[in-house]
Length: 219
Image (cartoon, rainbow, N blue to C red; front, top):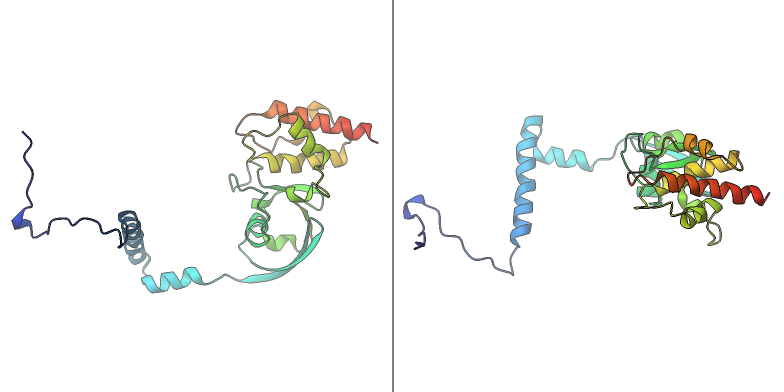
């Protein structure tokens, strides 16, 4: 038979009290305690006080004033010198269509056009784009009408989870701007720097070829 374990009188620890719903929840308490423990153990190793650590995190780094045009709109922005272009677009200009994937210049999810050329925005410092013209996925549709390549992606089931789709669209747009009706091989070569974790490559290639055919027929 299961015996009920009684509190150890010699331990000096009072028995646990039931949670009061009017007080802090158990989850909040544990999360707060965990955060405090991390700060308390990490800061002494760095040789700085907790107060100084919090103050350092609140201070912004050196800034530079830049001007750039994004999707036809001119912006004058003070950017921290450590910011990347994708951080500027997403966090300061609220253009969240551009995705952060690997954040190390490998997957292509963050691709945008800079002066018409596809670039990884996670690998471009914001201070480098002073005076540049940037196009993001938000700038493809005009007057509520999808661009040719956007519509082709829809018609050919190009997107799967959709996370890599903005980068795929931007690279495809750059290709179609320079090659009116590209072949399948030309599409594959152009999109080699854009990864699709859903492995939907065949449908993406078909979509871009289809967009080129429609674009070529309209010429």
